[in-house]
Structures are given as C-alpha cells and as structure tokens.
Image 1 (cartoon, rainbow, N blue to C red):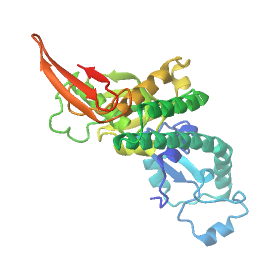
Image 2: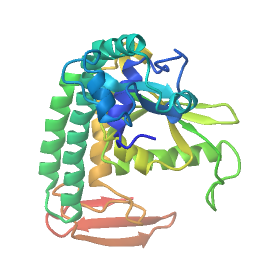
Image 3: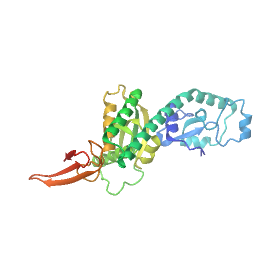
Image 4: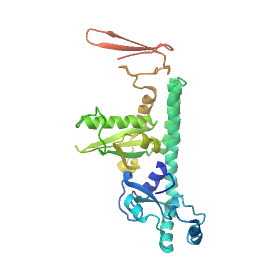
Length: 310
C-alpha cells in the first residue's frame, strides 16, 4: 500500500488522462475501483535507485506524475513491490513522461475549481454571521461567473447508487420515491461543499439510480467526504466530450441556483428564508394569519422593511 496520500485531484487527473483504463492491462477501470500505482515501487531501496540512475529520467522522483499510473486493485496487488527489468521500466516511464504535462494541466484545473469553492464557502460563513449584504453576495457571484466564462466547458461527474449498506431509517422503500429521496440527498450534499453545479439528467432502471451533474466550482476531496454513503463517483468527463455543444444558459442556471442556496436556506418555516433577499439582513420578524381558505406566512425585514409571504 502506498505511503503517499493521493488527493482526489491527482487521482482523477491520472485516471482521466489514462483514458479511465488500467495502464498495464488496457481494461476499463471504474472510479470506485481505481488505485494509483507507482511504476517504480515506493518501497524501492535508495541503493537500488542509485543503480538505476542511468535508466531513470533526469530529476526522477518516486512521487510524481511521471511515476504514477492508473491501475486495477487486483493488478496493483499482483505487481506489489515488483521492480521491472530496465528495458520494460524505461518503456513505461517514457510513456508516463509523455502524458505528464496533460496530467498536470488537468490537476491545475481541479485546483482552480477548488480555490473558487473556498471563496464560496467563505461567503457562506460570512452570511451565517451576518457579515455580508445581499449586494455583496451578488457582486461575488457575478465575479465568479465572469471568471468561469473563461472555462466554459464544465466537468460532468456521474454518480451511481450502491446498496452495500442498509438505507437509513425513514428512507422510502421503493421507487420512484426512493430515487427521488436519494437524488435530493445527493444534491444537498453537493450544495454543502460550496460547489456550483447543475444536475443534467438521472437514470433509473428499477434496480439502480444514477445522475450526472455539470460542475464549474468544486473541491473533489470535499465531494468524496460529503456525499452519502450510497453514492459512488462513476466517471468524470468534459461536458463537450459527453454531450457536444454546451447550452448558453447552463452556467447561468447553475450560478442562480448556487446563489439561492447561499442566500436562502431551510430555516424550518414554510417560506424557508433565513436572510432578507433585499439587503441580506437576518433580522426578520415572522408571523402568520388564517384566511378563509388557507394559512399565510409572512416575514418582514427589520433593517429595510422588505416583506415576503407564502
């Protein structure tokens, strides 16, 4: 087992550039089955590395993209600490070296998305503490969306349900209610990471459920930590690779949805607003009255006087 702790940006970049296939066998690797192998084993003694200097690339490092490749779990276990003969070793390392710039490019894209995710997460914290106004939220969201226009082709991440563990108490027992419930929980989990995303489609076979979401701002490590136990990441591709042309309003819809998730939250009342839509204040008066046909719920902002009803 590797001593190096791979982050998800590194793993998915290597997997993506390797065509989602095992480097050694050329067979497809699902993301949930992915392992990253060291061509030159991490456990190779320093004395042996010194002997191989004539074969190894200049400035070779054990833990670098030039030495990391996509691998099945079984293949990785079979290889273990095996060190290939110099001729085979050189072949594999040269191949890995050629695709290394592309791996670093994809890794950088994920890290830029993660930096934007931190900005939005910070904004959410400021809102929680009543340190940001409605206008400031809009300004930040506009700034983020303008920067995202430069990378118009979002990542499409596919998620699939597994039922290895029992569902929590209270979960619906059958479709379509179960699939709706699972998808709702997934979207809540993704929103909790600060991601800007738009769900594109969902697939239901009666035996399993899968969804695809387009992402512009996200931290893959946080997604892996936050999503429900029953959801697995199945694939990650550029939108254009999956669907071709990108709809003009796709990013706009995602930004608007993210903005509403940031400003509005379920506060336990029927209106579900915890901050004034006009000025961002959380100082709200709440009330209700009963008409002949229904109960109406009201909020009024103490700062600016804006009111909403439901």
